[in-house]
Image 1 (cartoon, rainbow, N blue to C red):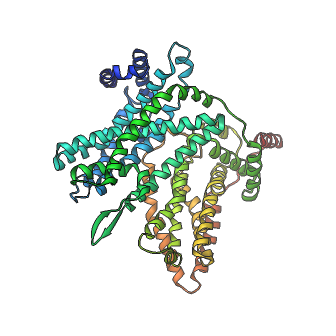
Image 2: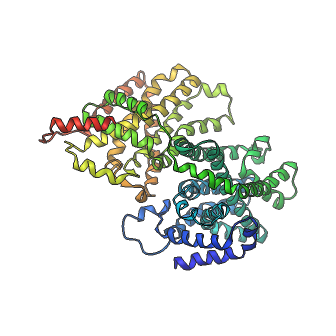
Image 3: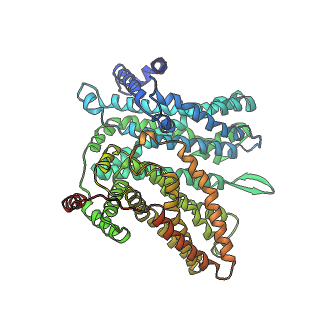
Length: 565
């Protein structure tokens, strides 16, 4: 069944044979490359369906195609916005486009960046008489086909709803814009990677690509607020207010076309936005096609490794381990966990975007509040409580601590004479606290203290204590497997529901904080309770019960030498 669907895709591609050939690609070779890639994709586990891969042996077929029904369920959430008869197409279709671009871009980052940057097939293909433009075109079409399938699943129901509600013109325009959106996302992402590969190489290039992927995730989330701020309420009517900075917001471009064609007339702003919606993707595509050989050439840099400052980072980890950990075993686990969190790119790709979002989300609420109040009023308000939102970082990272790209190496812990497995948990949790949670919190705390004044210092200390208490508690509830012991291929999509479930808990803690602050000396009482809670949670939940295991001094010495390397 999977094979027939792939052949249908290739048969559709045959209709564009002459167009592809005009780009300089060898269509026959490209067709063969794509056929092999599609067949190999039967072994690939997409992010959205990865929770099923570890349960039963999968049947033959493309797992990604089987996961599309889940995206179809997500698309149901868009139906109310599509059928929403407000007469303000800029608002409703701007929101729809923003949501679609967020989902497509995050899928592009998590599932398809590895397709665009894959160098494993170069040793096979590039040793044959195949030109670089053919390989690059196959790479782009491979990712583009799956992006279109994802988009089709997301928008199947909204498209039908739009056809019934707004007519055939709306339906055809929706399809055309979806193609342009996919083209824009795929091509601009590739051009960003190309720009970085031109100036960087080795480890710096890989780190920078990780950083761009993180910034894209954060930027799209922040873009929601910018789209919403493009509208203002005047006499209980939603009014679009054009501004120059909206030229940088693609969702506004695509929404403007609906406003122009279906809301009757327009102005120079709508014409400009509508032009950008068509011109920018087309120009980007032409540039990308011309630079495809350069992309393949620079991609070779991904195979090289550069020098790193591992010695300096190792010294910093050893210092933190001595401060926060008691036993030598716990210190070794701390240092190992810190190294894994810092060096594993797949872990960083899964976790760092949530860290970035946790850092930014409090300011998103500021941004919204400033639409109805002044900066002076914000500084005198109680909006410093929004710092609680960053505590979602604790849940989102801890549920990922059990995964690793090098999970097969976990057998060494089973073989080593470790007295108690709890040292693995404590070491990993303390490494997360020192290297991820505390830096993000302290940066936010500095900004909050500067904004709201020194009056909130006790509150900042309380929020810090709440966060450090949540770390062992969350781990005990959600971290059922030892750290770094499972493959990312079985990372459960359902884990995301734990993050949503954490919001009411954080809101409850927020409310308790507000209650104690209304009492005379209540903030100090609450702080004292949290100090005791931290001591009990860290010492009791992962108590290291010593067993009668004789560990020779020679083994301990050799282990210390290995950890110092």
